[in-house]
Amino acid sequence: MIRLALLSSMLIASNSVAGEHLMTKARNLNNDDYQLSFLAQLSIKFNSCHTVHSFDATVEDDNEQTGTSFRAQHLIDFGLCPNSSNSNGCSKCSGGGEYVSDLRDFIGAYVQMQEAQCETVENSCNCNYYNGDDQSCLSECYRKAGLDFCGQDNEFDVTKYVDCTEADFGNYYGSFYIGPVCSSNGKAINLQLFTDASCTTAAPEGTYERYHYGYPLPFSQKSIVDEKCISCANDDGNDSNNNNNNNKYNNYNTNNYGYYKKAYYQNQEPSEMCEELYNRSGKCEKHLELRNSYNQDNGACDYIHKIIPALENVYRRNGAIGGMAAIMAAIFALSTIGACFAAFYFYREVDRLRDVHSEVEMGNKYDKMVA
View 1 (cartoon, rainbow, N blue to C red):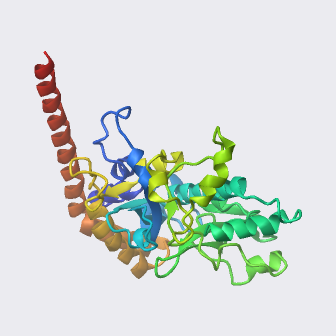
View 2 (view 1 turned 120 degrees about the vertical axis):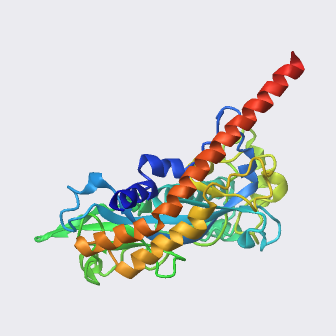
View 3 (view 1 turned 135 degrees about the vertical axis):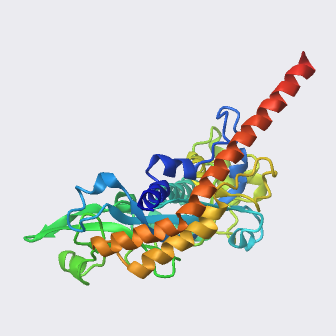
């Protein structure tokens, strides 16, 4: 039973070999022919944040304070939703897909895509009539584009703390660490100050403020992400014809969180950040209308809808990771779902082999036709 439990926990860890396998489906047999252009017609929408136990034998030496190789792993459930001129189109995500990724991957892509949007507006903003007050001009352009996050906390690099990271201050007794946490309802991602290198023991309330003249830790109260949609369409703001910049800015749909209208998306390619996030995510595309049933990847539907909720319930019942009791609780929980998870894993292997066999048969038929 313990062996099965450990196998299951290793499968769940996204930084393990099997975890990487879970997050990406093996149907992608020919990367050169694999087209992701449809992503330009979609926008990323944060759904929820989930915390589960994760087993990693390589961190035992670094986890002396907790004495365990179990640690908290944060997973993000997000949608890829069709762009729409309807202000509710993306927010309802009708006809979109559902995905899961490691928090690190999601925040990295999310923040970079936000920065790209801000840069596009900045390059397109006409400040000739603001008498040198560029900041007020930019603020107005951001407001019109629906990008209220631009220019906020721009001196604080939140991506530095997507993993548990030592803070740049401390005291005589030791160091402090900053890391991400999911809110209690899963609808927000915040930063929190901890006293240990695994970010499991929260620092006393007010600690950060004492070292920063009363200012709170950025994103400790406000979520790093929100439920607004961010376009996957690529726009680096460096078009060969600079006269088109103002036209692009005018094409912003200000009632739809600042992303471009559908006609503009159809001429765009997806951003590199969106492609990378898509490739590294577990996928449930049974409702994604932009892909037909053959191309849809539904390999992570059970993982998203069944396994993550079960693991999260275990984590909430046992609290933060620490001590033998937490280890045994995690082993018991993982062994309970181990059989169904293993069945899910082998089902996906059979599904992959069936896809390979199908594509080989199609290739043979094509060769006979052209012979």
